[in-house]
Image 1: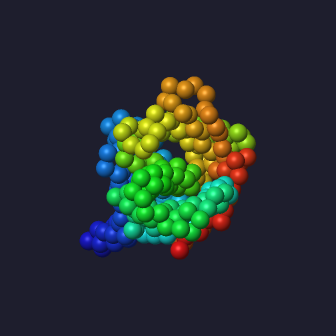
Image 2 (image 1 turned 120 degrees about the vertical axis):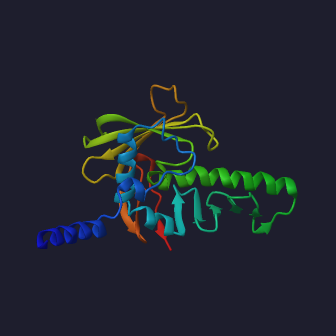
Image 3 (image 1 turned 135 degrees about the vertical axis):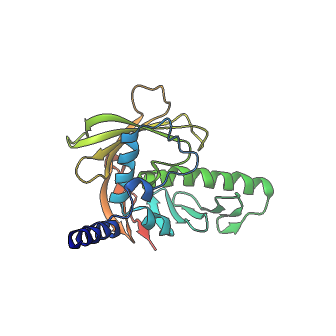
Length: 239
């Protein structure tokens, strides 16, 4: 009886320390193509989420700001579903509600009221957010809506590091659903260390390949700011 009690205590302790698997801690977004994805790729995606700080930390992260290669400054309120975008190279500011497309537009500090101008720049603002945020937070979106995830096997990054190679394809989401990405996940750290972008799924060669580096803790998550020869997304901050 004493031995049974000890075993129950041990199992109870383990349950407290490891209450769920990585997969149950990181449920897929509605519309993720789980049937078309393979189990190994899904497991790696869950490991990436854990290495980046975990799903709960990501869900609770609210305000993220970054500089998109000295072209734009963005402040994204995840909870409110809004983003303010300030162009560095032109006198334009767009604050857009990502859910319903409403918002405000300022050119040379003057708020625009003409419906055509508002529609044009608010649509542009949402598309800019889709692009610019993906460059920053893609590792958190491996199990997003419309994504099919495949494990292509072992690979090496351009600097020779061992990695698992994932393929991301899309259906019915975003503004460029024909895109394809290859994502290198480091064998040891389980962080994304490189990606390749293909304009079309059928393309054999990528349009670009960039390293992911400069990981640092922002709030309760990790974010990477360095994109190899492309440049930096710094300053990156979580409020």
